[in-house]
Length: 188
Image (cartoon, rainbow, N blue to C red; front, side, top):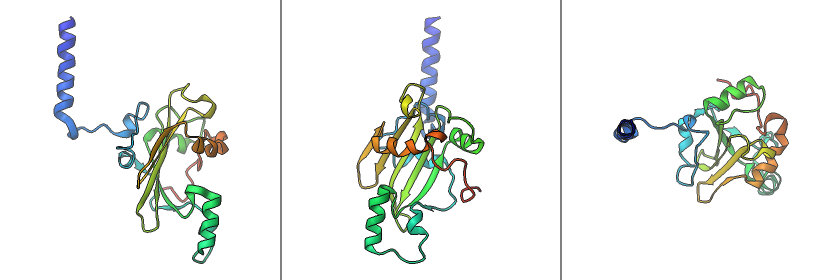
């Protein structure tokens, strides 16, 4: 019996090895155990569903002006909105997160994955941030979300990131997620 189990395990391992890139593990299939690293953060999310047909402008204050902002206005915007000033974003989600957003009911399920691709003017990548709903007990005071951020020019952080936690606390009534339900700008 034990020998048969070892042979079966070897066959599975061999199959996975032989299939390799022809059978990739998608981020949405593994979000509950997904380990986002500095090496993967800037690319893994591209296999997820893009919710935004075109990049959204994040800072509504400057986007609403019908003129090019001055350097002083950009500086004030950066002071007020931090990493969300003068930026455009694309939102990516896995199937679990999309279903929760569309249903707009209750908390997100374990494994839900939401990624925000931050772009500079001209659509060049500036960074990637996101949140993964972890199993109950990961961080119960903050909805059990794990946050991550990777800058295009370097730097990576993940876990219970205080700047993310404090900002998303404003959306506690929506399980710490902004823009729920999907608004009219994002519908396909």
